[in-house]
Length: 234
Image (cartoon, rainbow, N blue to C red; front, side):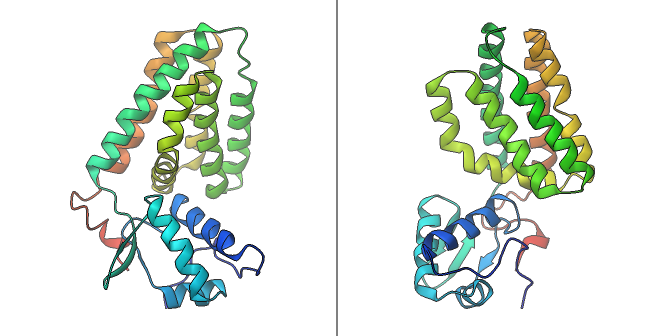
């Protein structure tokens, strides 16, 4: 039997469906359950210590969220990612985050950039501890915070509509980066450019930051939407 992701653990009976849902969702978004991975209900139920009924309910919800694909009589897999999916997502990120930075700089000094520095410092600590899971969480929070600081409600709403996919792809990207300290350090030039109100540099940096990450992940992703990389196959 394949070794379960490290986030899997025995689940208590309180709010069972919600606990299962959270566990599976986190495993997908953190990159532990990778695109194309097949979920076998009997194995999952055993690994989680639950019955199959609430597990099936959780799987149905994850299907509606677009994180899983279930084909009758063929089973359930983590929704595949193609190069086009990644390229579209990252090109949209550039537009959204560039707009957010312009909004933030236009509102200086009223906008407090301290939360960005705090997240950067926490990322450094997590990287020093070789805690890639924590780095992933903080990386996502950094970009969520950047969007929120814009003070633009429609932008925040638009970001929320793709937030889970962004988080999943960011985690997969970070897992492929052998130097997690560099993941943290990549954020400080952007923070400094924002703080001094240097819009050209800040927007250039966010575009480079996002585009290079997208290229790193997309360059060895397969075009076939029904499969991920060879190592992702169950």
